[in-house]
Image 1 (cartoon, rainbow, N blue to C red):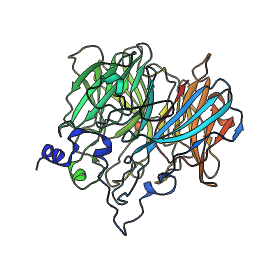
Image 2 (cartoon, rainbow, N blue to C red):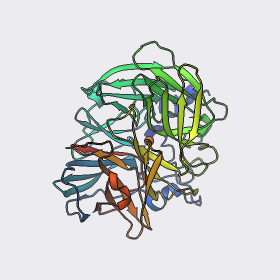
Image 3 (cartoon, rainbow, N blue to C red):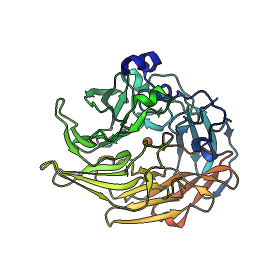
Length: 454
Ligand SMILES: [Fe+2]
């Protein structure tokens, strides 16, 4: 049976990461406890709406909106041996702030879209890769049932899209398996919230394209060392593996020219889920900063962190000579990088990420702020028993500098088995949180979120 036949037979021809990654329904007695089902990785069962929230410190009055965070929350029986962190139904956790008050916390299931939550053209979507369509949610975080991007999306989407703040366009590289075959589309969503362009990219590697990056002139194709794995799919595992046979490469795809060829830079084997950013220098060469894994999804079939830590790495891609340099620019492992929301693809000075620690089991123990202008960093260590999450940067309304604003991170506190939202002044990260909003339950370790002004 070839791959196409198998995928059709298995029902994956319709796409959808929830389907693709959800082949782990049967619990096997006696199998070892999967770390991604234990502790604060374990799903929560209760859907809660809570209006009476305790706040410690002062929430800045200018923060009027909602913080939303998405992550996997597998429901029902799960095969502990085969379960992968990236599997499971998505659950949004949300917190509404206004006038210095925390008005509510609630959580809500959102189906297969389990990875990120974005806002564009006045609509809010839970997102996922590998074929699943974005799930539009209303202001109470409930799925609306409306087709994504006003019904203009003819393919799957990506968990991560990059915003060109000048044009107001979202760019995403979206892979899926529409008829059992692997397909990648570059999808551009206009400022009006409708898909403006879709073009197919030939990518024989069947790589796991978790994210792209953009610059003024290019979309970066991260065709790296983790690719689709039929063997794992057939056995009910998360179907992507480290692949030594594939030449890792970064492609520069011109954004404007329809039929332009991709300029490829072959690089050393690695994988990247997330870029801080990419941009062009004065000579038109491309600089990309990303969290680089030396190896993953090879021996460990359940999650990303045990085989090598993600290290901040910079590639300089010379578009004239075709040469490149690669440098690890920090020795603290980190993930979930964020920058100012208007600076995707632009020169940038500040970046923020979650320091995950150097042990095989990540501690999510610190927030790191990088100043790339003077090659320095500031580190805030969470208190003993606390573990953080992706630090989302929210610019101040009248910001005069790139880092004037706030960082928000969900923090899990082992002492009471609950989570809280911590708000930092981004210019005073090491002073610690200026406010904590105590939540009525824990928020499982998950992936990505955003602040939406409202
Ligand atoms: Fe991601």
